[in-house]
Structure formats: structure tokens, C-alpha cells
Length: 145
Image 1: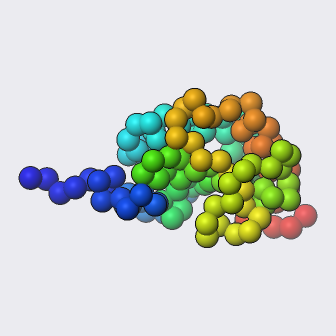
Image 2: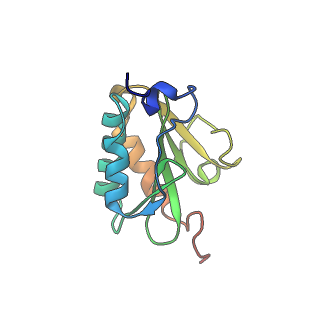
């Protein structure tokens, strides 16, 4: 019998997919390709919204999640969990209007996001607007203006 998949081993919190931290489009696309449905469709849609909304988009895989930025650091991330995808905006508590409802555990007091259990939960227009707002200032790890 084959060993259990990363999804079967997941405790229900962060998905235990073995990902190597790497910068670039290919690592993010590879990460998304490993996800089961519906998480894969949700992550693909988030990635598409980011690509269509943010000029000079940069991608990376860090800590088993996709990270997105636009030159001055990372601004948002998308991580798959056993039952949902969490879309998180760094400094979202101070920058986003309306403020996303979820305060992710372990991501800092200013981080806000949404938990998406199905593709139908994704409000594309609102997510694109939050992406535009959050990238108007330097992101995490970026230089100050």
C-alpha cells in the first residue's frame, strides 16, 4: 500500500506538502499543481487575479504557501489547508477597506484575510481591489519609501 499523501497526513491545519522555498513563477505553479480540488481551483483563481491585477507581479513559495509582491516586498499570500484556502494580506488591518474578516493565527496582528472553502466563496472584484490597495505601500521585507 502506498504511503498516505500529504493531504491524508494533514492535521486539518496547514497542509503538509513538502515544498522547497523558491522565488519565481514556476515554483508557485508547481505548488498549486500539487493541491487537490477544490483548493487547486481556488489557488489558480487567486493567482490569475493577481496576474491580471498587479503589474510586475513577483511570486515565491515560502513556508508551504504562495507569496505575491510587486517590487517592494511581499504583500499577500495564499495557503492551502485541509478544508479551505486562506488568502492573507500583510498589514491588511491598516490598509484595506473594507477590512477582510479573518485574523490569521501566527501571521501578525495587522494581517487580515479570507478563508475560501469553494470557488463560489471567491469575490474576484473585491479580491482584486484588496490587491490594488495592499500593493500601494511596501510589503513585508521591502524597503521603506
